[in-house]
Image (cartoon, rainbow, N blue to C red; front, side, top):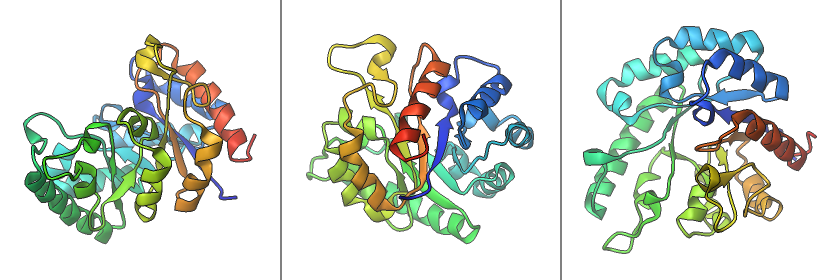
Length: 252
């Protein structure tokens, strides 16, 4: 069995500042790492890293804005290295920046692939984090995700968003097995449940994690990032999800 690192996406706790007690609580639960989003580190990357170091949490991945990569790639690389990041994850593209057809998605993917080459030269990996819009079929029958994951661009599958897009998680993970750099471990509540926007603790929702796990193992990716988009109690989510996943990977 692989040695997994269990991380926590700090976006899950964004509504419950300050960040210092969040980091302390995650370390006490047993988390190995955190995955920050821009708002968690942008004002002071060095200070954020020091806060993580103080409680023994690593920062192997970070969600970093596409706009920052496009505006000043060198600065983004410097920030990633300050944080101790291995995997730079692009979490979203929206508004006017979101491509509208297959040709523009192909051009978008080619641009990301060029960035990925430069980040690789700097010792970093570039990965894409999905929502559901990347799975909406385009006029030619292709999907945005298929144009994004080209060249050296890797993948951080958000498994629950794949479910919400109407696709089979195992099939998608198997399809891009060699591309997977990390996983967003997220669960979606049973039909009709609207509390917390229909997301729930890992292991309490509709995803059959034991059935899915062989596909996850076969990717070789060892970084598992817990996420909930809108928890009413982030600590309970963090603790319950850690307990479930740690047992799943043989740590509990």
